[in-house]
Amino acid sequence: MSVRLMVLPSREATAIRVVSIPADVEAQEAFRHVTGVISEVEEVHPDYRWEDIEDALDAHGYQTQEFVLGPTLG
Image (cartoon, rainbow, N blue to C red; front, top):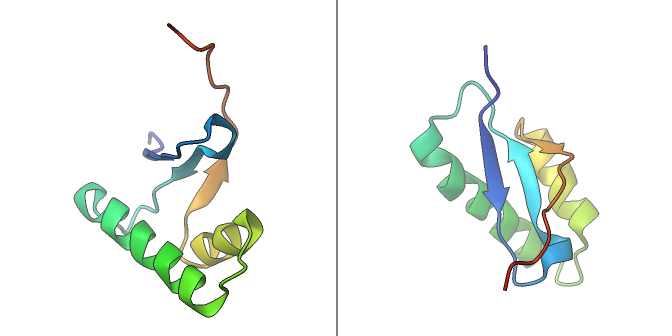
């Protein structure tokens, strides 16, 4: 079985994240679900850090994946 991945974009290249999508979440619903989880963290913890978001996503079955971002083209 292949792993389904989702890129969490950011204006800052160092803040881009990749997470695996849980098997019980439909691909088309995953982004909406993740943005809802992130919004909830932002509301509860105004001074949140990535680790707070990562913990909340982990609680919903999303796993942070290691990745290598290629060089800037331009």
